[in-house]
Length: 295
Image (cartoon, rainbow, N blue to C red; front, side):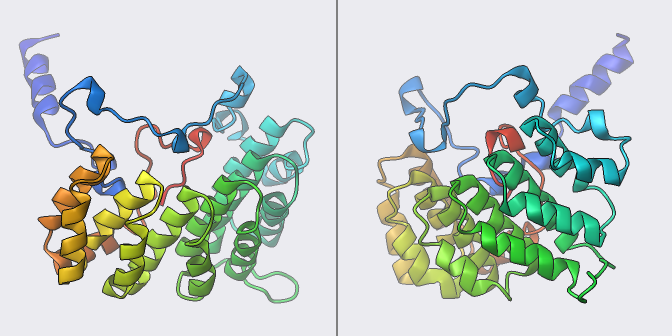
């Protein structure tokens, strides 16, 4: 490496972090850790299971990049669930057609593989927000069909499918599906509750104050973390008092999120929060195989 190359490399290291690592995607992302005992591992987000190399590669769509749309649709019915998962993800980037939306809607609402259903819901989101989407024979637009499938998935037995369904409704048309999303705040899984609360905050802003105060007492530290984060956008004595209480929360990530929220300027916070609503980029560790929704 030349001296010039070395200088450029050092300059690169000193630059601002990759915007993809935006801490607002997780309010506790930059929590300070002073000692090993401060590192908390919640069992809520840990799934222990057995995965072979084929399953771990299911999110890698490179092997099917050159396949025709018809072949990918056929793969949605393949015997191997890994092939079905890969096809669902690959169809996310295909042109929006009646066949694509119908195939993904079927995969999202049927079948015995939760990952296939989750990936299909994720792919439907792209087609539900696509411009110039084709209507079906009965005149139903792609966004309506995608949203209808997502609503069905709110009753899926797998919580991560339900969580992804909230993301889909948020991206497709959160206003039209406000009631569906609000009902999801009472889901028995923390990821669904968290996603629904975030979506409603985008829609309602400070009008979410009472619900956020309730969620700040949630059993899940992830839900309390996000409730504290969003309370930073509520300009009220009740919100500030609750945030002060949360600075003594048992979970480090909740305490530190509450401390930062107390320093936020509410109206500016709400503007910045809304600007992130269409940012579906993933943080390290938040990939599809880890079953962490983007919202």
